[in-house]
Image 1 (cartoon, rainbow over the protein chains, first blue to last red):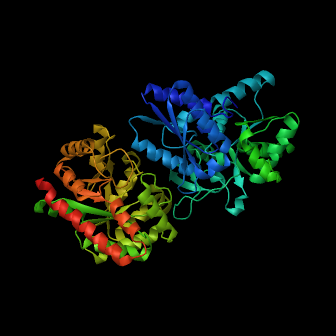
Image 2 (image 1 turned 30 degrees about the vertical axis):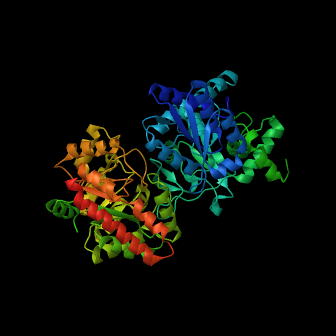
Image 3 (image 1 turned 90 degrees about the horizontal axis):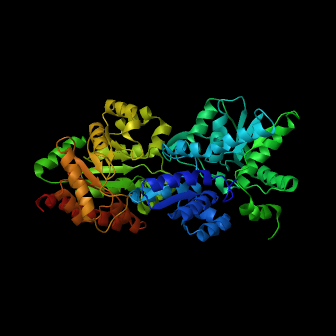
Length: 314
Length: 272
């Protein structure tokens, strides 16, 4: 977790510098939970670029704090009213803006999704996560961790975590948003339950109906609420190099509370999914084995949702 | 009917070809044949039928809304193929399908193109399928006698335009502006220059049809004067449908009037 409250700035700094070099003066971005939007706004404030952020109207409502943070940082936030009013619709709208303003505008994608070469660009900038895990783990414990675990929506923090470990013996687990349960149809688990599709310029696993229409998704965490997933995750799943599982809304909320009380860390609801699964894994592991969880964001933005979950008014 | 012969005939007559787009199933599947008939009997030469998609990223608000109406009416890609079959067998016009790639991918390229061919479809436009990724698709389409129509835009480099022109059949879909679909009030000189440049580069290789934003007879006249062999009108037609959702008679009458105005602009554009 970095300045801005998530891992997103690893990528926004890199891409914004690229945009500057390309001579673009205006940056657009999509955001789900608002973390990528905040990171983009921070970066643009620093580099003197104009930032406009597309955010699903539904997400604007449930992540109010981040909307205000973006505005404070000088970015303009465009609520998107089309479709399911979440992350996928924000990407649709950003892409429409991009083709309209191509000459002046750089589209700063926030996850390992979209047309080539975005998934690679974002992966490379986020790989610093896995590289640091490697280095720090070696310094503190020696060797490799037994497993690394990260949450997967579009999959940027997970790809950044996994990529440097692909050639190692480390077990890797990606945790998708299981929503109200995989059997209910109300979730965002593209890898666990989707089919191959072509969406947002990538061939990957997609939640879709029998005719190829994209299905509405659900997750307690806006940042995982997306019907596709980075194509390299699909590849790593097919190659059986990474195991992809799901944690439900309820498991994530419980993990959020658990980590807050036991470690004094309020995790974002997105990585709370990873925490939930890691706790399950830990029960089946030996004392001398180790798990590294990527805590990609902090949970201040989600306190209202957890209060609702607990039935408390704040 | 072949797209090629429509262009050949129009060339002989010294006029532009009018392509009319409608989202199949908007506002309901039983409207589409009537809508298409009204367009064709008032001068539309080629019918472009849109297969509605949940996430139409190349489309502006008008076609987004029409896609949603059609999807809410329960239309599926197989229904659209049935409608295409009805249109191609009852009206003497080529039918071109416009679809995003995922519905084709889900059905399978082979199956989709085979069914489309059976339904009498003459060509297919897939805005999110780049030529570089569709060699196999093109091979099957050729086998099924279906034209693969690619798009060129202001950002298409000369080298890529050349490759696109080599791969495209029927016509080249030229987008004269940076942006998504949707009726424009006016076009600036930049759009005219884009059309003129592309027309001069591809002359003699493939006819060009200009689409995105064209909504008025004066737009039609001006692009035909710049060397366009054809114009494609979509959002203006869809807007006429949207304005008259509850009154089929007025809808069809207004569509007929729109088509007649646009078609006569195709005829006198060359002399401007």
